[in-house]
Amino acid sequence: MLNIVIFGAPGSGKGTQSERMVEKFGLNHISTGDVLRAEIKNGTELGKTAKEFIDQGQLIPDELMIDILASVLDGFKDSKGVIFDGFPRTIAQAEELKKMLAARGQEVSIMLDLNVPEEELMKRLIKRGKDSGRADDNEETIKKRLLVYNTQTCPLIEWYKNEDKYFHIEGHGQLEEITEQIVEAISSVARS
Ligand code: AMP
Image (cartoon, rainbow, N blue to C red; front, side, top):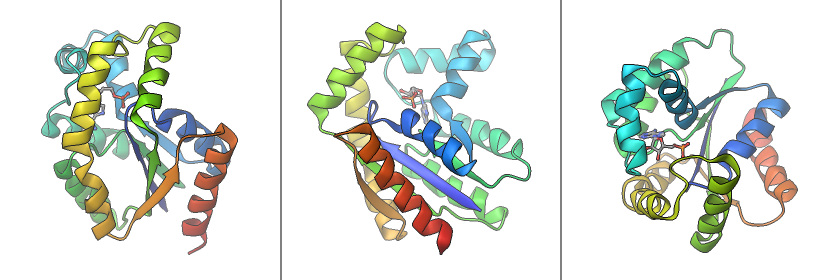
């Protein structure tokens, strides 16, 4: 079974590329950001808690995120594989994901790191905020999210290098070329 972690800063294209991989490889997709936004929309208790963190550009506490991920994962039966988009975002989450998959006799197949320069991320996110109206895509919150990414999430690059799962993707350029790099990387682990 393929377990793909799609990694990168906010605005690096994780969601767009994940959708393409779902179509191409028939994978299940977990976007923790989408799960949280759905909870907010439905006005649940979890949504209310999540909103406070999201609006501040901060991460939702690990314990809460891990419980959410476990329940989504349990819902995938007879899956060909899963693409994890926006999870893990901290070392604690990566360690927990490793345990969760091990308990199912599985492991992360590859971690794809979408590299995009920060000025380009800012441009993309500001544009997305205007187009979609996503509340956390405003300049002030974007800056906080990028800081959180650089301090809390980036250490995962070394963590996955140590696990021998890391794969660099050039995430700045033509959309099709980025997709091609990702397809090639996933195809190579699917064959092995
Ligand atoms: P995203 O759509 O992935 O950019 O996520 C939007 C927001 O949801 C983030 O800025 C966080 O506040 C929260 N979030 C999403 N995934 C996680 C996660 N794995 N851990 C903590 N917070 C998360």
